[in-house]
Length: 339
Ligand code: GLN
Image (cartoon, rainbow, N blue to C red; front, side):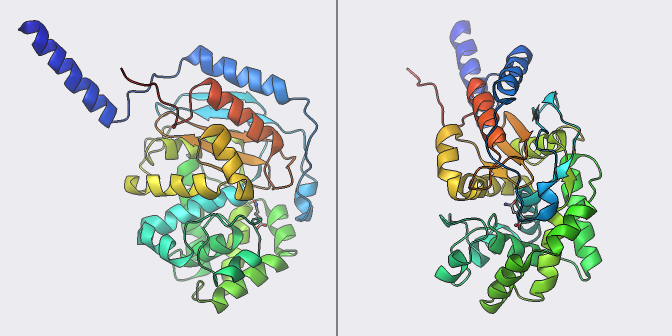
């Protein structure tokens, strides 16, 4: 009698834990450190890929920067290599502007305006815009991202910009700053993005002032981050929108699943399918050389290494994150069969 009561209580507790998503084994400190060490060493001398050079300032960034950071929901920070050097966040910013718009207007605003589907095209494709008149894409390619920036609330440019930078900073848990050299360099060479924004305006997906939206978007891409910042941002998403270091709920918890779904669909551009196949992780890359990835409830991870492959994704970052996550059982699709 007493035994069966205990058994029933245990089952109930397990069900409660499972519902709360805390059933996964906690990560062992030694296992995380070993995984970071191994991936760091394995890819340190890899000589593949090249810095982005279509934004002149990015070509000058030290291509040997290589840092790995992993943060767990309890706020433990693991690092390996260079986690101090900063690079521009570039397209990783798209995740957080999309999230800001969802917080302000609900996920339907993104879904209805630019969609949440993979384009199968490069990140700055004009063909993808033309195909469905600015719909049927997503906020993680340039057209959808510039449109998302145009949707951020605020009267003046200053007000909108302050809102964006504060929001990113809350995710990182420190005050982030813009890399002026990168901003000026991209602002002087972003004619293609200006054209994309005009086209989105022509199709009514950007309601007003496409030039201003492109300029703010360019500035958001120029925010400087190090690998540790990016890992904290990723861990905030892994932790239901609560920053594990500051304890602050920085986004609406109910929007996390939609944000992660868009990342899974389109985070690594036209290579998103290959990435998901290899890792199962929602992720986002930037041409500055960073990638963030999220194992929901388990960890956020980031790697910075500027040399990119032909799709615009950091070569080392992809390899290191895949190895580390797979070593730690980070793939959310990996389940142990029950009896
Ligand atoms: N600022 C870059 C651009 O718009 C971002 C691209 C990227 O990181 N893939 O071209």
